[in-house]
Image (cartoon, rainbow, N blue to C red):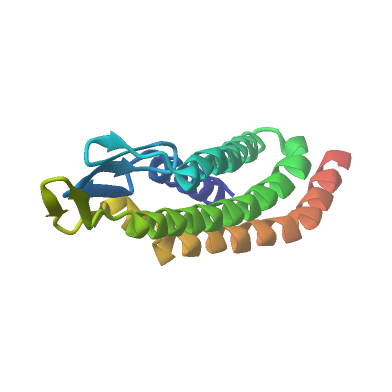
Length: 186
């Protein structure tokens, strides 16, 4: 149970880290960065307002709520080692929080793919001025290490392992509770 709780805390920390750090860095005529929490993108020195990046910031609140819920239930599961009465609440909470983490990480990966898709649509090819046509070099889009971490299959594998372990613990909980009651009667 402790390893399952620790797994959920680590995945929650990765989720918060990946949401907070820049995922995309721009170079060329478009400069700046994008994370799920905020963004700063400049096109030819002018700030870019993107409804999609604003939407990402709003949706990231759900990721933080999911991570907070998982950490809370993981702490309760660890605390239930000292107080067996808490197990009836902590173990189902641990299972539920692993399911919430599965949804949160899937949502984070979808939001990151949306951010990358939006970044590929930002372009400045040429501008016509009174002096003629000014052609700009192609924008440079760099995906940071956070992209690789956030879209890793290992992250989903860790959550699936947590779901399997917590469902096993949840399945064996009635037997353990019955044994504890029998010990208390003696």
